[in-house]
Image (cartoon, rainbow, N blue to C red; front, top):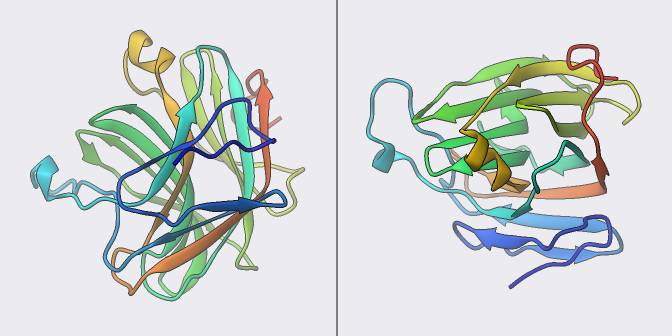
Length: 203
């Protein structure tokens, strides 16, 4: 199954477990099943010990870009999340999540280079948040926003080789590592050519 969103200049193809992805009237929905996650523990566990989560991905191309969406996940259990996702290589990927963390809706990020790190950014008042993934030159950046206009810096990082970056795929992920499943709604989806002028202030 391939989805063609009017908001994106590239098609999206599913990866990982079945996410039951649907798109209508500018709204994308997906669902993770019980225990589905994409995380490689930094404690030294083997890569094969990681579970997998539903993803919907398309080619980013070789230029700078910004992918934006408002995400509204059903946050019921620890780790439930909807996320923007970046896949650069088999062991090189990153996700920017609105996640159920310590009982609160929290903007979180993970960058995986063989093994995953994990960082909480800030709590949001509502169970919805705008997320943005961008690439500027060789740097990727994560930002989040309450209104889609004023962006808060989450992190900046590099990932993969030049050749891998040219073949990067970007899109959406849903996870439910400890729960019985999690659905997420993505809307206000936008893809813009060009990177972020100032990676840290979000403009």
